[in-house]
Amino acid sequence: MRKMLAALTLVLLSPFSAIAHDEDGEASEVKPDRWTILHVGTLIARPGEASQREKSIIVKNERIERIADGYIAANALGDDAVADVLDLKNAFVLPGLIDAHVHFGGGDHTERREKETGESAYRMLNIIENANKTLNAGYTTVRNPGASGWAIFAYRDGVKKDIFPGPRIFTAGHTIRVGTRDQGGACYDVSSCKKAVRQQIDMGVDWIKLYATCSGSKPCGKEHAPSVFLQEEIKAVIETANSRQIPVAAHAHGTAGINDALRAGVRSIEHGSYNDRTSRSLFKSKGAFYVPTLSVQDNIIKDYETATDEMKPVMEAFMETHPARVAAAHKAGVKIAAGSDAGVTPHGDNARELFWYVKIGMSEAEALRAATIVNAELLQKEADIGSIEPGKYADIIAVTENPLENIEALSEVGFVMAGGEVVKTMAAE
Ligand SMILES: [Zn+2]
Image (cartoon, rainbow, N blue to C red; front, side, top):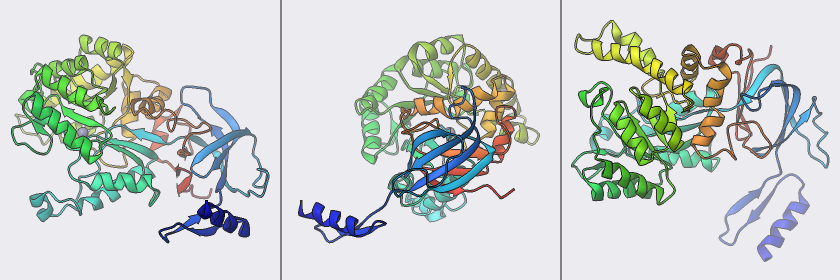
């Protein structure tokens, strides 16, 4: 009580800011509210619904307070609040984008000695660099399915504590995979798989990532390859994760691996290259999400000419099958959640994933939904992100061309606000 009164007195003495001390003697600043008003020419508040003209988005601290008609003045908020006003009258404004599949940990900064010891201090430099590229490209939230070491957790928490701006991160730890070494996510029976999941939960994961098949370039990742896990092991992974309300994402290329993971109850399938008719009906009956990572096609197309004779048929199969099956899944009504596999593809080019969606027949609005509303639902964060609505985080981006007419407008994101903080401003016209 004494503490509260002391703090209150200080606030009354200074209308702008005051320093209060708690009983440990640690100073904590009592901050005044921060107000920002965005004057928006065209507002795409919730992709898929009609755009609106000439609006003001009023941001209080890190969240959207309300949206008003017309362009309201800096001093129109009442009391003594004076807002910063940002001019986006010539822009198309939309919610911060979400990428459901990135790997921030890889890059040029990992030290050889670190690779040997498994320590991860230098890996943080990769994460900082990759996260900044991603944020500047208009992606204000990512899911990072699979990471080794602590760096990604530290970075995630730094963003959460507002120590530095960055995309919000939802991350898995070590990928749960078949292996007999009792470490790093490897497991080989029901009991070791439960243990591996609990070890990841202890590290503070938001998601569990499971390798339900091998990588697509290996024989055990091909179309007709069987699942690498036994059904009872997949079930054990999901039950253990769900006991802490943690969802499971399964990497799967081959049909059996996709379908076994869906039957067992994963929340999302990553890649899903050889999904078939059965997969599509399982996606729908289970309410699971499909994260296609179609941008990887860019790499395959680029690398094809120089590939070995052994790899060429594998690549041809992917080029022929993957886009067509994503299109079939979309047509069948499967929920497509945008994920680019950045890390395999270049960080900062995440929107190429959406260009691919339009190329295979999704509308621009559907592609935008995949990277906003649908991904928010995948992450179970619809109350906080995915659209520009009162109460949600002020994760807001702007482009100069209408992305509903030309999705490639997203390759030049000119303005980025993340949690009410401006991280990139548009160059003056
Ligand atoms: Zn990946």
